Amino acid sequence: MLTQKLAVVTGAGRGLGYSVATQLAVAGCKVLIVGRDAEAIGEAARQLQQSGLDVLAHVADVTDASAVAALAARVRREFGRCDVLVNNAGVFLEKHDPALPKAASVLAVEPELVAEIHACNALAPLRLIQVLVPLMRENGWGRVVNVSSGMGQLADMGGLWPGYRMSKAALNALTRLTAKELEADPTKVNSVCPGWCRTRMGGEGAPRSAEEGARGIVWAALLPDDGPTGGFFRDGQPIDW
Image (tube, rainbow, N blue to C red; front, top):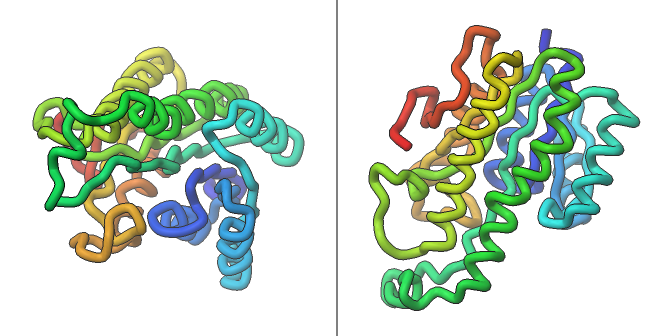
């Protein structure tokens, strides 16, 4: 069933997104990897193609509405379908130096920086959902995975890094909103926390590899027809919002 499915993975030039793309391609999907760095996304596609995987590259800054529209136009024109959308692209722009915690305080952060983080982590997924979910509905099958974080959990909200935390809480709200609107539809929408992974964002001290973090995302991307929707998961298990 997966052989002809098209998956779009954003932020896939390296790290977590690259691992997600790899695992989806191994599972039999054609994968369109998206990134704003043309050299990085092109090299990532070449590496995966050399491994015999069905992967294509697309250069786009997902915070740019015109670039997202162009991506959707290409997907419709070349493939006529979109079955999986993994909203993985994200940024953590606030200072996270443990020696200078006050620099990341809600009382000190620049609101403009918060808006910049929100544009990538929450508004870009909204734009992508708006242009690609209609294709899923036309074909009667779809999976949307919003890559979130435990740092956005209201149930266990800590202090510091308000831009990142607020953006991921907003992304979780987008998951719930979209799933509710599509509850009578075969398209499933879920948030996934991959855990703290060794990526450029997570740092070398993180306990999990990108491959480990990607597994839970891929699980949500390939859910069976009786799988859950509107949930928040880590490693395939539900977690609190």
